[in-house]
Length: 577
Image (cartoon, rainbow, N blue to C red; front, side, top):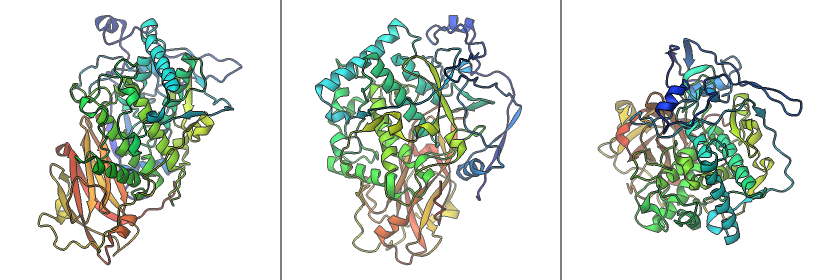
């Protein structure tokens, strides 16, 4: 594939903050760390005949490595049998390091590192005779709610009775922190983070995370049929924080939420600023249809870009991750807190019980997407994806290794989702009554080659040449989107937008969005590329024989911290996975 991008990074072997803290460090900073006596020892693994147990592997320290970044470079390497490709390996827990705030670099008052054990088991899914059914949170009955609250109450009690129990509430919350805020390096690649967001690992990692969280809750109340509720934010009936999470006396309640967004405030998945509830609902439905169907041209457009060992993190988000997923995080996060805790920052998101119900619906989106009747393949067959692996503690407190390949069929993992209406499934924007041909090119619109790269500190209009005239099968590519990873970023894209109604997304001209939640990376800058399918949009606006379109890019949040390197329209690439 063309557009291969690569960069060489020279690293030294000087110890950095990921080196395990010494016993003196624990004594000096007791508020930051639990004591782990064997933190500085290499993990030892024993074997028995009943279950396979293997070592995690030895850290291969090198002075130089090849860092591969960018949408097309990553795709090329991951698919090439001759490339230096390898699946992401599970982290070395005894090399877990500090978690710091993404903006200031401040050491966070939390230890994300899990307790250690001498044994790792390759996890095998049980044979489930009955599926657990995950219900929509806004429809649960009193009996279910009492059971859910008791399970969370017991999980939180472990924080006091045994803070090192991996099933405890804070230990479970810290899983997200460790995998997302720089506590783990890639095995064999010191100083390169493991990051489970903004790549093809996003869906499978969180599916496994919820799987064990759910089974731990069931174990604590001795009910193997217990299933997490999902926050049904894609349905108008569920477009507010579920009320079961908003009772202050309940263990499900979290004071670290945006008080302005408590029920009955509707979630605005597009951060459009619309004040009318009906407009918010139709915007939300339009966004869901766009990120699930209309703007998705390939498997990776939805799933996220390839991410392999030795590659810099954050190669690119899929449409669902950068859309509704991020919107819910930011909607719930508390702006009164320094780091928008809890849901507004990856390190603290797992401290909010609502996080797990939010991600249950994110997981549900993956399950729905795989059933949609589109021409986009629904599976990734690349071994570097299938063999990527993570470490979790199961409900029996055993440290287990899991693979992406074993998470592809959620029913084999023993659960399903209660059937509810999917109102966005056919929620196509209305076609324009007249063909869309910009009557007068806006005076501030310039040709792409004259404008980019550009900082998005204001609304931008740009003339972009099409690859073919009229209703061609095309994709819009926004290249080298460089962002400050410490900020919430969001912008929307429109094609031939004559009305210029920024708060209305339920229009044929709406092409898609880009967004990110603040998170930690070594360098505070990240680059990614997104593509948006235009084929259906062209049909809805009827561009006749035009060979040029006007793109409007509207910054919604922190546009001054976004630079877009380039923009182009190309023929739709092959849709194979």
